[in-house]
Image 1 (cartoon, rainbow, N blue to C red):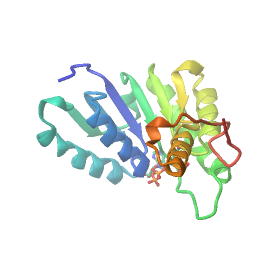
Image 2 (cartoon, rainbow, N blue to C red):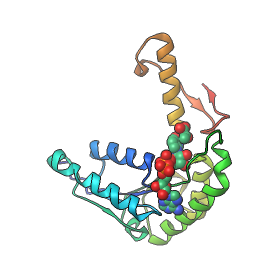
Image 3 (cartoon, rainbow, N blue to C red):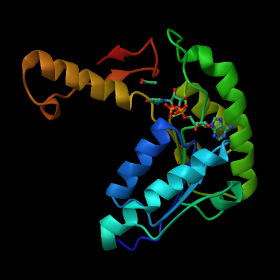
Length: 187
Ligand SMILES: NC(=O)C1=CN([C@@H]2O[C@H](COP(=O)(O)OP(=O)(O)OC[C@H]3O[C@@H](n4cnc5c(N)ncnc54)[C@H](O)[C@@H]3O)[C@@H](O)[C@H]2O)C=CC1
Ligand SMILES: CC(=O)C(=O)O
């Protein structure tokens, strides 16, 4: 077991949040996980599902997972934020800014109040704007607040180029730069 003792708190237990958790658990990223969602049932249901994996993952796994609240951020190493309202059909990411900025401000205030001192990773959209909102509200060092930016766009670009050239995506080096949104450009 990688006994790193690391604690990760996830805020937002929807499709992106739970995908992150499955990946984190499989990569043995941490030993302790806490799930927070405005709908407590989402945090609790996913906690139970993920706790079930302990039996099959054995010693190379994690030691605790629970549905919690913002006080759990106090001694966390990493907080991952994927909370937000769903994107409507045809809606741009930027069109969600008013609703999701309110949600992000509320989350940021609660995380700040907890005494959290770790690294924050944000995926909620529009991600670049919300990362700035979070950083401004918390006043945390900008180096400890990371937005997912154009990571996903770059992966998509590499896959598309790979499909065109009939090579493996890993063999393609390409980046989309700028905002994670409709204005990003290939580099
Ligand atoms: N940065 C990127 O590359 C990507 C970003 N996204 C964004 O990630 C976010 C989540 O997407 P999905 O997981 O697909 O949505 P989802 O609707 O499946 O999950 C969102 C979760 O956030 C929760 N939530 C809403 N308000 C909350 C609050 N105030 N506090 C705590 N939890 C709250 C909801 O109850 C729900 O469980 C969206 O903003 C989406 O646009 C999605 C894909 C890629
Ligand atoms: C939802 C989103 O940001 C994406 O799939 O790129």
